[in-house]
Length: 162
Image (cartoon, rainbow, N blue to C red; front, side):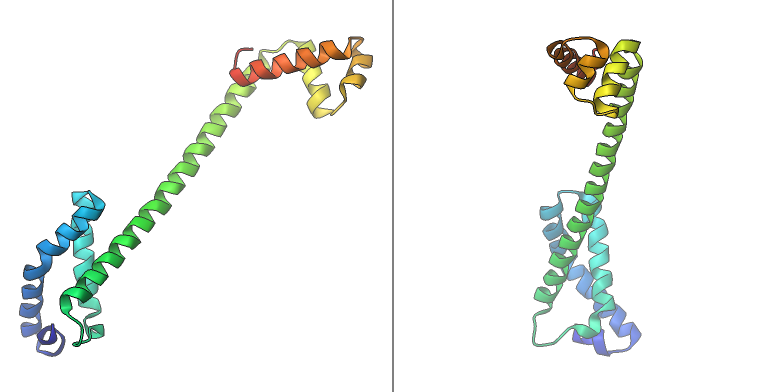
């Protein structure tokens, strides 16, 4: 690594080549064990060696190169997994939103299939926010009957059985 840091471009290229050839398989195996995905492991291997090249001046001689390399590799793996987790959580949120839209569409279809009296009862209860007692007076029905009817309609709407 010292030759790679301080020598001419030709010598630095040869030194980097030597480092790559010496550690490529070890680092790849290290990544592969943690990711279980060959394509991701290959991509990450390249990114790690690019990081080594970009940060070659940060290497301190009193540390072993292999330790420094594997710290970079471990950090890169963690960054990759975090990014993958954020991406997965975005996908999950989109899936939830999509299922909510689908559920709303089913509910709207179910509402469309209600007769006028049923729609009126639900409007009175949930839009006008009338109590069952007030609804009973307006519709000339018993409070108990309205409770049962509205409850059954809600159950059927949730199931999509209306």
